[in-house]
Length: 303
Image 1: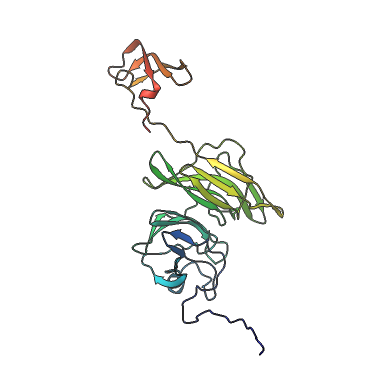
Image 2: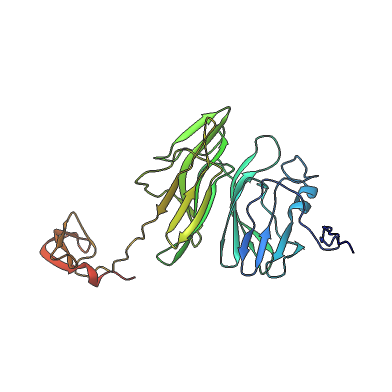
């Protein structure tokens, strides 16, 4: 008796499979599900926006990780126009999408959208503009932070048009070629206030870079690896970016509301530190103050 073996393709073609595409973000995990959106795919119109593009982009593909089963789900609200080359990150039940390309001409975005995975609703948090914020760009990185109990998004690097873009960021570097520029910008977006800010950056900042990976390591630390640094050169460096939390001080009434004063910090021991406030003027009546106040810092800091 002879035995034969044969391989079979066990794919069940009645089971939904994701649409072929490129340029989308790595699927984002929330709980036991992966969420995939956007990307360049067959039939996507080469337009800024129209009903067909909106219809195609109003679908999110979801994978149930334990079973490996994919399904296509409709969404409500207006999806982002930056359909590929965008950056994505997740905080609890919200997936955030930043920037990306529009699939027509050189149209880039610096908009920020949220997507609620419970209600399947899109929301625009910050519109595309050339007036402020990060560059309109693609292939940047975005990660999440929690500083002083507040949720933030950090957007780093990317590549976009050299013309009609946002003002350059102080301290950032830009590398231009063929009408495009890469950058090493670092911007923070505070979810509570909806504001973009530029943090003070110290240490070994990466060069202008795009197409790298950016991951959240902890509540205030991100890791950047690899990327395109221009002139056909690619990085194999790893950067750890740590964001310092601000300390919150409740100053006693005897010290508050003064100006034109002097302030010293005295370290009595390695663990005992004092603020020394001397003189100045009081806001109450603009009268001169001649007292000296000692305040132990450890009594003021609330973690």
